[in-house]
Length: 178
Image 1 (cartoon, rainbow, N blue to C red):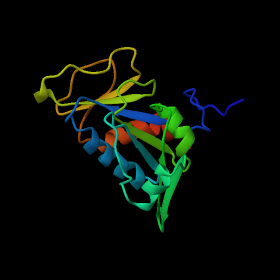
Image 2: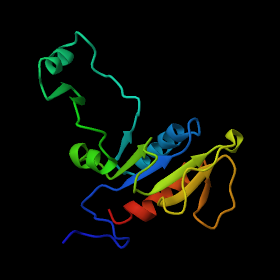
Image 3: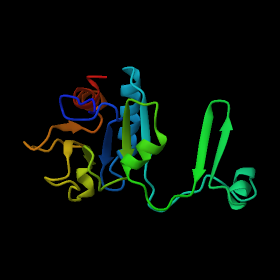
């Protein structure tokens, strides 16, 4: 039987908190602040960033590119202090698949860019952009963070610069028993 927290989470799995919001709402800035705050408290933080347009870290002519194009199913580039894996995938992995395949040495994962997923979410917004919120009642929303506090009984609402308050929420909900 899995080791369960009082909240029902399997403690053997690294918890995932997804930071969601419309384009230019401040997701990356908030994640940077949360990483700094959580690591300052002694937690090991991993991140997963989704890019729906794809990306390239391996460039034509480089040895690792040549290895991949010669038929390697995966290529690892290693140097002192850094490792990168280049691997073709059969599709777009979800957050749990990425966590289970690639992330081992972390206490928490903060995800950005996965708008639709079953994991707990913090939605960030900017009222000046005049956009509708992304998350509805069934989206596992645990908090809102924005440039203006929205009166809501639904979930706690934080200033988007309140990394300390949001980190308190994350620690209480997902890391307290670690």
